[in-house]
Amino acid sequence: MERVVSGPIPTRWLSQMQAQLADAERRLAAAAQHLAAGSGARAIEEAYPGVMGAAMVRVWLHDEPWHRQRSLPELDRLVRAELPSGFLALYEMKGDRRGFAGWRPEDAQPLIAEARAHIAATRAEVEACQRPPAA
Image (tube, rainbow, N blue to C red; front, side, top):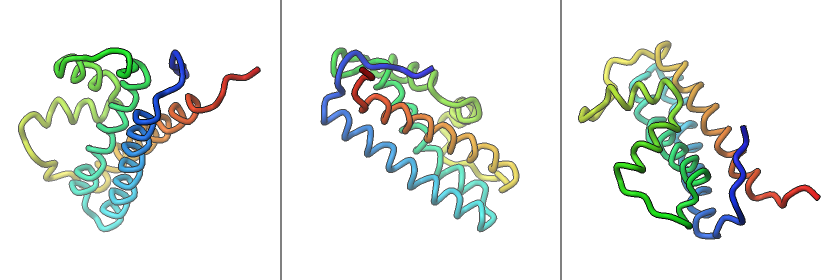
């Protein structure tokens, strides 16, 4: 279901969303290179922050932070709710650990595909919010 914001997105927020998505897309490209080189762990390490950034953009589209502020625990809960299932599991497993050692490329591939779909869908939502309403 496509979200519709209540009004135009302020330029600084739109710029931040575009920057987050550009970073996520750059990270996805790097993740694909790591997969091709045989490093599933590095691929996930590269994609993970991009997926988190895209989830934050989804929160912004839904919550419109230019109208209200949230506490950090509230934002954390909202971001977790926007993560795709594989990355939610990684988020829960990761805890305080710093890496994703031991992931084989064939095990990481579905997560990278999930990341690609998540980021593309988020990009489409942002672009839909930029279009003027149909007359």
